[in-house]
Length: 416
Image (cartoon, rainbow, N blue to C red; front, side, top):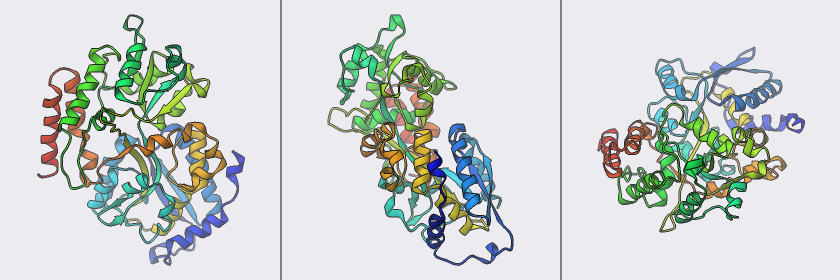
């Protein structure tokens, strides 16, 4: 990794040119400027981040970074509360659905006068930076749920390729399941509606359109949930509900070979490679979500970007920091060390990314993935979505009843 530690004097110069304006009065200082940064990355990613920040400070003697690690689950409300009180950090790592909400509340600085190399970013990642005609974030990482599969377990049953349709997916999962031996073709986390969305899109369903048309309870969405419940009822996935532990249960089932297939994102790669089944990384297969009966497919595009607090007194310095964190070399470092998917097109041309099979296998997944609506309410749709999906799994409601309830709650959220 020492090749990554070369200096970036040219990048620093480019960063200053990107700003395109002279320092404001609040930034003119005889000493170093200190910017505050709230980081929502996980532990492994934060270790990589610390290296990058140390390099940034070496190359920018006039800027110091004070980083605070904020648990991801707390980031949205913590920033909103602090920023509305006039005490926000200069820079926040913001989940894509938080950004339009913060922008609508007047809590973010528009970045159009700074962010001049947008053409180098993947379209589906950059889309989340835009709202109401302005640019509010620089994409740091993108992701989508893909079909992850254990190549060895599939091959043992004669499947040399992953399933490409939902019908094939059912047949493969059925062949790989042996409930008496606690072996399963598929493992699904029942508490989180985010993991339901690939089934929803495959069968012709939807969430909310950009013009705020609610599709979550249309015929396709209902069929998607019915198919998912059939996987449980036909015993090709275990019937396990644990709102507190189902993410870790999914990871563990896949890592140990208890389950042969899961829907999961690139953020999980580093952890999965610690599992006994994937000590040889080549055994980890990554494929797009299988297509539904009409050839439709989809997977929620997620990710995070860096935003600047509207009340920051160090906006130019903050953008220099963001530009450095998201340059091609540093995105390649996150890809190499943490399996994250770059948002810059040029990062994919670097040797470290080009030669990383696990990272490149995510490109076809992203090509078929689906952006969520970029609306201020986007970060709040799961408040009722999750418990209603849970109610369907608990057999408290039919799929139609559960999704109708979601639609009704979204009507109120959207003031429709």
